[in-house]
Amino acid sequence: MSEEKTLFKRVDYDVQGLIKYIEMGDIGLPDIQRPFVWSNAKVRDLFDSMYRGFPVGYLLFWDNDSVGGAKGIGIGGKQHVVPDRLIVDGQQRLTSLYAVIRGHKIVDSNYREAKIEIAFRARDGKFDVADAAIKRDPEFIADISTVWSAGSSYGVIEQFLANLGEKRTIEPDERKAIITNIDRLYDLQHYPFTALEIAPTVSEEQVADIFVRINSQGVKLNQADFILTLMSVFWDEGRADLEAFCRNARTPAVDGKPSPFNHFLKPQPDQLLRASVAVGFRRARLENVYSVLRGKDLDTGLVSVDKRDKQFEKLRDAQVAVLDLLNWHEWWKVVQQAGFLDTSMISSETNLVYSYAMFLIGRRDYGADWFELRRLMARWLFMNAVTARYSGSSETVMEADLNRLRDLKTREEFSSLVNQQVNDTLTDDYWNIGLPNDLATAGARSPYLFAYQAALNLLGARALFSQDSVAALLAPGVKGMKAGLERHHLFPRAHLRKLDIDATIDVNQIANLAIVGWEVNGQISDEAPSDYWPVWVRKFGKGPDDLGEMQFWHALPDGWEAMDYHQFLAERRQMMAKVIRAGFKRLSAATDAVPA
Image 1 (cartoon, rainbow, N blue to C red):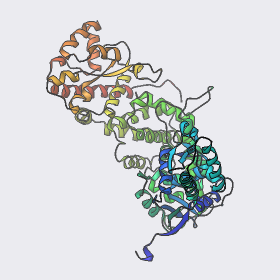
Image 2: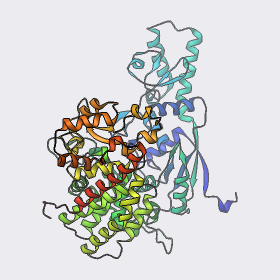
Image 3: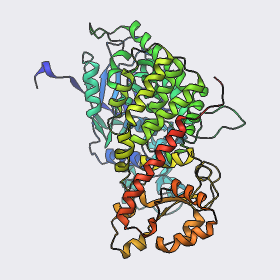
C-alpha cells in the first residue's frame, strides 16, 4: 500500500501505558460507569490469553487532533480538555483491562453496579471467575486486582505463601512455580498491544465505513455505537441521560414517582438515539448524521465548532422530547389503543421506536392534538405491525416516511399524509390476498399472529369456550403457575400424526392455533376436532347467535371439524384476515375520551 493511500499508522503500547492515557483522558474511553456487555467469563479469557502470550487483537483509534472543543472524559479527574484518540474498536477490551487492573466497578448490561473479580490459581496459572468457593480456597488469589494495587509482586507473593502455608505444606518446586507465576501475572501490565490510529484527515464517512466493517470479538459494530461515541466526546451529558432513562425503564416506579417503566419496551440507548435523530434531523439512516454531528460543512468539507454546537443543540431538543415522560407514557397508551397490550405481543421493537418518532413529530412539529394524534398513530402502528413494514430494510422505509413529511406545514396535512399512507398500504388486495398468504406461516412470534390477537382485543372477543376476554388474559398483571392464555392446536399434533401430517410448518401453522384458557386446553388435549367440538359446543351452552359470534372471532368456518386439514387451513386464513380487518375498522372508528 502506498503512503498516499494509507489511512492509518501503527502505534505500539503496553497495558500500563494504555491505562495511563485513559486516566489522563488522552484516550477517549467513555465513562467506566456505562453498561458493560462482556461477561466475566470473557474477561477471564482475555487475561488468560494475555498470560499465555496469545494475541488478543489490535485496537483501532481515530486521531482527534483536528476536532476542538470536546469535553474531557478521563478517569478520576485527570482529564485532557480534548481526548487525542477516540476508540473505534477495542472499548470492551480496554474497559476490561482498566476495571480489573485498577479494581474499578463497572455497570453491567442490566445497569447494576458490579466488580469484575477474576481469580488466579498460582501453582498452575489457571484463571477463573471468582465465586464463594474460590474466595475461601487458599490455592487462589481471589481477585487479581490486588496484585497490581500492591505496587509490587513481592508483598503479594509473601502474603500468598504465608496463607497457603497455614493450610498445607508447600514443596520447594511448587514454591518456585508460585513465585514465577505471580511474577508473570504482575508483568501483564507490560503486555504489548498494537493500535492502528486512523489519521485525523480521514473523513467521517470513511471512518464510519471502517467502523461498521470491523468485527470486535465476534460482535458486529453498528452505526449507533459510532454516534454514541461522538456523544461521549461532544455531549457526554446527553449520553448519560439516555443511559439513565434506559436504566430506570427496567424497574417499576417506587413511592408513586414518575418512571419510564412500561410493559412494552426496555429501551437501549441506541433505540432512543434513533428516535431522537428521526425527530431532530428527519433522518433514519444514521450514516447521514456523522458529518452534521461533527459540525462538517458538506460543501466546503471544513469542520466548524459553531456548526457542530448548533447540530448538537438540535439533537438535544429532540432528545428532550423523546425522554419526556408525558410523551413516553402517552405513546404507550397509543400502543394499547391499537390492541397491543404488552411485550408478549410485540414482534418488532423497531416499529415501536420509529412509530414513536412519528408520534412525536406529529405532536411537536405539527401541533396535532392528543385526541386526533392517538387515533391516527394507533392506525399507523397497527398498519406497520400487520404488514411488518419495519422488518428488513427498516432504515430505508423510515427514511422514505420522513421524506414525505418535508414539505408539510399544518397538522391537517400531517394527518392527511399518514391516513393516505395507511390506506395505500392496507388495500382490498392486501386484505383479501396479501394477508391470507402472510398468515401461511408457523412463526411463534409472527407479526401476523400478534395482529390477529390485537384485532381480537379491539373487537372485545372472548377466548374460545370462555367468558374471559382475550384482552383480560393477555394484559400484564399477576403471573400465576399457569399462563392465563394458551394457544390450542385446533387439529392436535397427535391427531395430525395419525393423518401422516407431522411437519412443523404444517402442524404449527398460525391457522391451526386458537386462543383458549389453560383449563380448556388441558381438557381438549389430543382429541380429534370432530370429537371435542360437539362436546364443547354443548358445554358452552350458548344460543346460535353467541356460537356464531365465537366462530367469527376464532375464524372457524361451518363444519370445520370435519374438513380436510389443508382445506381448513386455507379457509381459516381467509377468515382470520377478515377478523384482523374488522379489528382495524373498529380501531379506525374508535374515539378517545381524553381531551387535548
